[in-house]
Image (cartoon, rainbow, N blue to C red; front, side):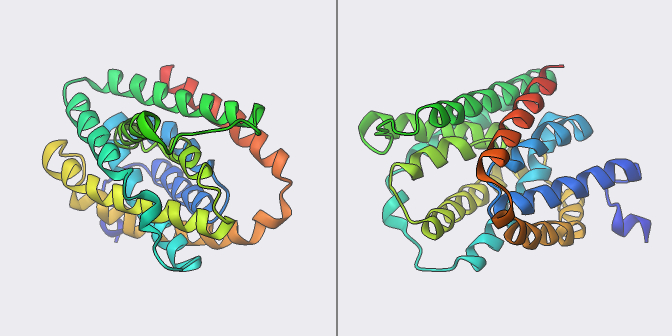
Amino acid sequence: MENILNPLNTSWTIWALTALCAFITGLSKSGLKGFAMVTIPILAFLYGAKVSVAILMPFLIFGDLFAIISYRQKVPWHYIKNFFPWAILGIILAAIFGNHINDIQFKYTMGIAVLVCLCLVLWKELRPQSKLELNKGIFSYAVGIAGGFATMIGNAAGPIFNLYLITLKLPKRTFVFTGACFYLTLNTLKIPLHVFYWHTLSWDTLKLNFVLLPFLLIGGFTGKYIIKFIPEKVYRTFILVVTFISAIMLFL
């Protein structure tokens, strides 16, 4: 029974912390945007930087599926189809780069990616009226490559891609649904690279993801319920502070 519930044969403390990360991912995907960034350094500390990316990725895929089912509507491919080639290029570059560095260097790269994303969020917070043109010309290409690189190296592309989606001025439900479709597609495309190139995704890690899936679903339903009770300003400040601390932990 223990091998079924704990396929990686870790301590139960590590198992419980991983379950907490699954719960947090569910909270994030159901509307508490940005919360999942906290899980990046936790899993990197528990499993090592590169393996942690593979453990978190299926949770993100499950979370995106939850969001798509919750906000289901026509898939808005016309918003994101021109963005995909550059994001895929970023993923390929990150895969090659990540395969030629050690785990410590990988962890530092993850930390830099998180801090860059955090700076983008802070910039948007401090300049909410700024005119972003990230969906046009060279900016679109740069954001696509940067987002693809960040999502492969640390599952940390949320803030980058969210800035792009903000420029489209979508209604809230369409914004969440479009983002979920986008992330689900990219994360699914990353699976072969993790299995055959990085060798970080295995049956045992997938079994752990499925065992902890109930925690993610509980987080998803909890997030949908509590989001309306949390003051937006308090929540965003909390996420920014925790994300900053989490990024610094990757360097320590």
